Image 1: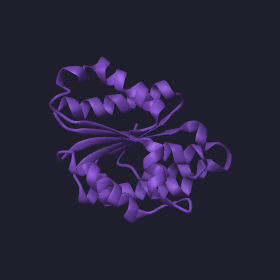
Image 2: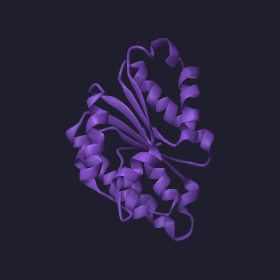
Image 3: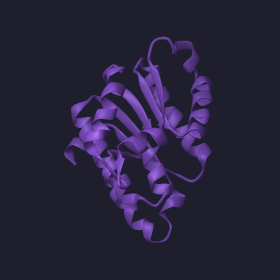
Image 4: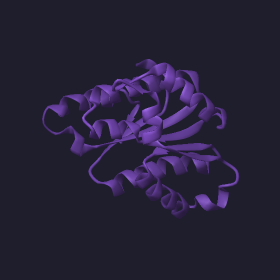
Length: 171
């Protein structure tokens, strides 16, 4: 857990999509504004919400300097899930070419975790959080995650604290 706390691995638990879009865009814009590259791993719907927000925040005036890479969350997720469980070797092999395109200290937003939680696949989401944390010990980047509070009804509330603990910051 000490490695997590030394990194910027933030999470927010949101009530509606507008709140999530705003928080993710602010996180990414902060890094882009500092000249750092960014990567968005999100559904098409979330991508369509984030890009205009980044432009609204002012991304357009510096978009030629830092790189902004955008990937489909469902496609990436399906490429490293094996029998409903994230495979770490496949995950790392997927990230290597992505991070090869980015300069150190990049900012990343990942919706794959939220997708897993909305499906009720909390153990897979927690495993993916752990894999991201191990990756953060190998690469220099900041990561922002968000989970819909609607995913944590009933028996699923028990996963909330475990997910919180996988992060260095909770918004």
